[in-house]
Every structure is written in structure tokens, then in C-alpha cells.
Image 1 (spheres, one colour):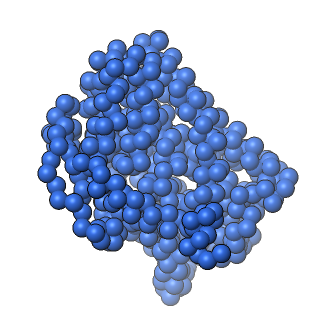
Image 2 (tube, helix red, strand yellow; image 1 turned 90 degrees about the vertical axis):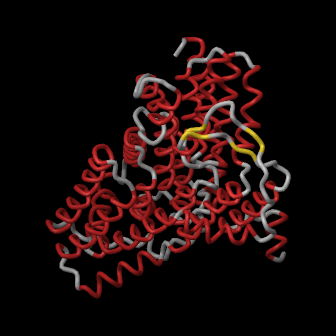
Image 3 (cartoon, one colour; image 1 turned 60 degrees about the vertical axis):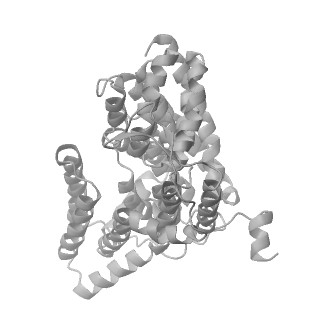
Length: 457
């Protein structure tokens, strides 16, 4: 079968092909969806102000021009990813990463469930409290070889990261980029109701761990059941140098740990983000190269090689952002949001709460940014909550569920597509792995929303 036939009649397309097809589909959709917009006060949408607007249809080749525009729009994440690859290659050239992985393998080799459980909860905690997501890109080249050496697979490695991140966002207690923005826009006391969200975080993270461990046991019993058993990891992700852990390695890893603490401080106190994190990473690369006594030529070669290995990842991020560029240029995103939110005001409270979850889930495909989605949807959902007899706190919770859980599967999520690319996991294989877990998590979300309505949360 030729390549075109394989895409159309069965074999799932490459992630880049999938994103390109979605860009084309988005442009075609703009020709039938009328342009419209809400009035805004800054970023905040003013409820009840939606109106249609005159807008010229997109030119025929907009789906092509949107790609460089998407690359430009996502430049901060793209450059961050490339520098992550370069700096990690420099740190790895010191031997510190391979040494600590070798030590972990020796100590946790017979207890993989401890590693999986601990890491999932750790990533969930980071996302729940300070909104970490893009920062987790750096952990993929570390966890993949570790999991491969422990007779797991790359799916488990990426699952550890993104199940933790997705649950952390969906049940965030203090995430400043999602829950605090949503509560502010809804007129709810900031950080209120977090006891319930901490409980939901524990429940959903435990479900995620159980899903991962079930898959892990199947893979260890029969490696052919791995969803990535036919993927070639001989390009370096599975090559570990089992070097002895030395004092130099300890210092290098200490510098890396301190850099993370510095960034956490910067996010919480100084409002740092990707630019500052990128600068910290570059500093880590320079300092660890000096401590590891690497020659300048080795440092430069390692950095360039590491960055080059993430070129595909960078392209996927730009292509994913291009979908949003098409919809924004055609001015149809507000029309879509308004259209799917309108029916909710006629529903009974519990059903309306579930309807809000559905709306937020759909919206996350078109607005994969958690804070961006909050600015667009919460000014609409908060008044709807009043009309349907739901507390605004429940509306915020529905937003969190719809944003966080969907982040684990929507191909418009640039960070997800980037992490999958680094882990060499085809998107359709990831979907097969994650969708059964999402079904379980959405059951919990529905039960939680109904209970929240009944108990007056």
C-alpha cells in the first residue's frame, strides 16, 4: 500500500502528519463557522457581550502560512526545548546522569512500583502547586533510559511524567496559572476549597499509578505487549554508561537540584517563567562543564548534538500552535465557545455541572493554554453557575477537570506533543494507552461534580 493509502485506510499517520491534517481541517472549519467575539477588559471576557463580526475568509494557503506563524508564536517553548536538549547532553557528558541512573537501577531494580508511584506523585505535586509542565520536558531523556534498563518501556517513562502532570493540573490545589486565575475571574476567594482538591489529587494520582502498574506488569510478563515494542531506541536513549558514582557526580547533581529550587523560588516569589528557566539551564550547563572538567570542544559538540536531537520536537510544538493560529486569525474561537456554552443555562444543577465539564473539555482542544482557557471561559461559566444554581467553586472545579485531564490527550497541546516526540512515542500509541485511564478519571470527575453540587461545595 502506498503512503497516501496507509494514512487513509488504516495505518496511523506520523504525529507531524496528524498535526498538519488538523491544521487543514481547522481552516476548512473556519469557512462554515461565523466569526464572532466577546468584548474584553484586558484578557478578561465580559459575559453576555458575544456578537458576530465581519471578517474576511482566510486565504486558500493560510494553512501553510500558519505554520511559520505557529513556530514564531511558540518560540519561547521551542527555544527552551532546544536548550534543554543541549544542556542535558552537557550534563550527561560529565557522567553524572548515567551514574545516578545506574545507582537507582541497582537499588530499585526489584521494586519498580516504588519508583513509578513516587515519581507520579512528585510530578503531580509540582503541577498542583506551582504549575510545572514545560519544565518536565527535561526529565524525558533521563527517565526513558532508566525505565528501559529496569525492563519497563518508554511508555511507562512518559506516562510517569504526563499522568502526574495531567492529574496535578486537573486537581490543582494552588496552581497559579490555572486554579488561582479561574477563582479570581469567578469572584471566588483565592486558594479556597483546596482541601477537596488535595483529596481529589490523591485519589486521581492513585488511579493513574494503578493504570501504569497494570500496564507495566503486562510488559514485564510479555515485552511484545509493549505499545512501543517495535520502536528503535538504539539512538542513545537506551545507552547507559554504568559508571561509578563519584564526588564530582554528586556535586554536578547538586548543582542541578539547586537550580530547580532556585526556579521554584523564582516562580513563587519573582514571577519567573521560561526566559528565566532557560537562563538558569544555560548557567547549569556552564557550571557543570567546569566542575566536570570538560574540554570546550566537548561541551560545544555535546550541546549542539543534544539540541539537534530535539529538532523534531521543536517542529511538532510549532505545528501544534499553528492550529490555534488558524482559528484565531479567522476569529472563530469565541464563536465556538459561545455556541457550546449557551445550552447550559436550561439544565438542572447537577447536569449543568457535568455540562460545564464537557464544555471545558471541548474548549481545551481549541485553547490548550490553561490560563488562556480560564480567561475565555470562566467569565461565561461563573454567571451560568449562578443561573443554574451551582456554586462558582464548582464551576472552577469543572474547568480544572476539563483542562487538566484533556491535556493528556489533545494533539493541540504543544508540550504533550513535544514530550511524546522526545520519548519516540507515536501519538496513536499514546492515545491507546491514555484513553482508558481518562475514562476512569472522568468517572471520578463526574461523581465529584455531582457530589459537590449536592453538598454545596
